[in-house]
Figure 1 (spheres, rainbow over the protein chains, first blue to last red):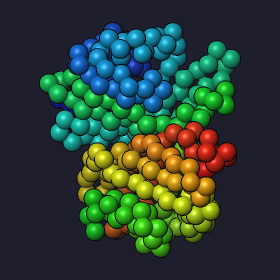
Figure 2 (figure 1 turned 45 degrees about the vertical axis):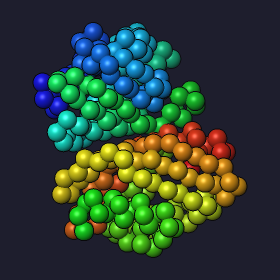
Figure 3 (figure 1 turned 60 degrees about the vertical axis):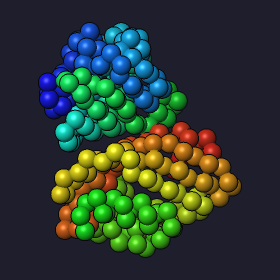
Length: 119
Length: 124
């Protein structure tokens, strides 16, 4: 799978709740620097990290701008995440992907976390 | 100026505190987007910069990973700042910028404001 296809599937799986397929996009030895989860190593840690998202079927991550260069990609996204009290977290950020042999080997994201402290 | 040169110049002018040179990289109608506010126009950007001067003794940005075309770029940058009180802040963020006629017409930064708020005690 080429980089652009991996990115397309990443967001497709997130937005359709296909979390097992989502995890399979990552290499076994993936390294992830996730804004909320911190530094993760290995697909198993990624799988544990996204457990919370599975219980939020309304969670959506919309890719807005995408740039791809060879095995690397950056994406500006807009997350809309409904809360149990009816409010919605609506915020934007950026992801950075490195893809090798059709698998994500490195992932990092960058966004403001202050909206979570306000809630 | 090519877009990568613009990125490097934007960071080097900030490092040496040459704000006039930094501002000269932007178009008059630039849209400058931060996590909690958007600034439209070079005049308002200049005003915002004056506020920043009263908070930081040093603000350094270092481009790390860059993906660029002729008129658009996304990059990850290392941010290192020192407040006037000597508090240090270090983090990484994402930047998306667009260039038109050799000037930055759009720049959006994605970073966590919490490290800044904890030190400054207010929104930046």
